[in-house]
Image 1: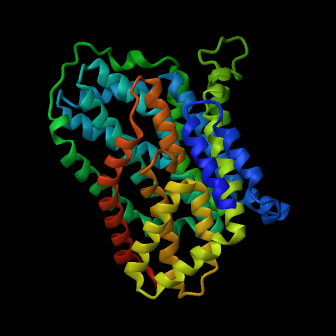
Image 2: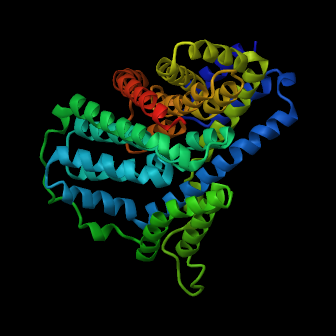
Length: 433
């Protein structure tokens, strides 16, 4: 009954995704999940687990939005157009790599919120074809997901898995660094091959303003770059002192809020409206993700986590390589049904309940993250960043049909996912002592 109610809720979400009913529909499914299956203790436990992730995400989204209002991202997009020396393929590469670099610090969700819009704006000002614009923004969207595997804070999925499984940040980075480079390299190669006709073009800079003209608040931009460069070191120090990452992200966001609102200069009129920044955070989609935890938690408590545990234990008898690939594809399927944030937590619980060899369990933990990150791009409901990406495209006047997006994602995602999981299986044994 709970599963049927969830599927009905999912249909309502799909139907009303562009309307105001997305949170209410999910809440309806949560309330009708059998009440006895989820205790108050379990809800509080999940809340404590996801609290650090959600607060970190909100703080980084505020930081991203302030820098967006200050004109930093538009300036960077204009600079890339200049560096592209009028070659569409070089611009394609530069936009993707800058998106990957920003994701490492600001999460894939943050880059989906603030990087796609200026890129689309600049591509339209360059008067490139619609197919070229789509090729670039679709590739940028996927490259940011691939790059988000690198650090625990680069993706809410990573942070949830690391917090629940108590994985050290150093160990995570050590394991995922080569996997991330494989994911980025294979993504670029795949998308370059698929879109090579669309990106083989030239452009003129005559219709573009100068990059420095995009800056609205030089003070915020200057200090924003300092803060972005300092965040990785701050995260590292916080981990050494066992401080949650949301404290670091919140301090950075508060400093930038103070600069944007000119709190340190009482007689100065702020250039950026702090109220507008707050309103532009995708609260409805964040609420959707939070409410999905309730739905998935209910399904897990009525036996779904035990089913996943049983499947994972069956996979473990196939050896480390097939276990990594099987776990990743299992996480992919569940992410596109339940969304990746609650799925990675549900799978982490199931993995912790397995009675397999520690090395096999560790490869399951990392394969779970890879599947819930790369594999969640197949359907629009698979990840929060994809939902935001669709929302940004709609605001820019580009409405992408879901079926076309799913078909294209299936073609391009599955080989990249397979190679990334294979690289994990080949690399991890070298780190096991």
